[in-house]
Amino acid sequence: YHHCCGFQNCLSSPLLWLEDIIMALGGDLNSQAFWNEFMRRPDAKAAYQAERRLQEKKRTWLEERKAIEERGEHRRKVADALEDAPAELKKLIAPMFHIRFVEDYLWMIFDECVQK
Image 1: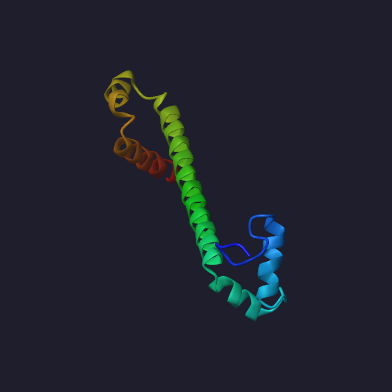
Image 2: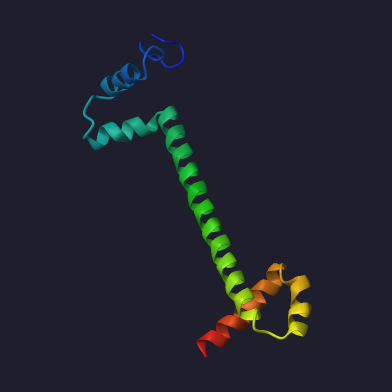
């Protein structure tokens, strides 16, 4: 038996270690009691929580990526619309076009014009 967990095959093979756990907890993978007992184990809780944190990070990353892509698309549409604007207007907007607030404001105006 290994000192960290009490199972014979802990370090020798992950599959044998899993078999030890399954047998110690009753062996029926389809029973709710097995999974309830399994989730009480500190290592199972830690693995489950780590997986949940990873999934949350992935979800957050995908939302941020989508927002960045949408902002880029809005910026391109506004820039395309400004191609037809007078040169004086372009000179006024160009130095501050990269500021997010300005981008958002110009997008709001552009979107209102498209909807009308």
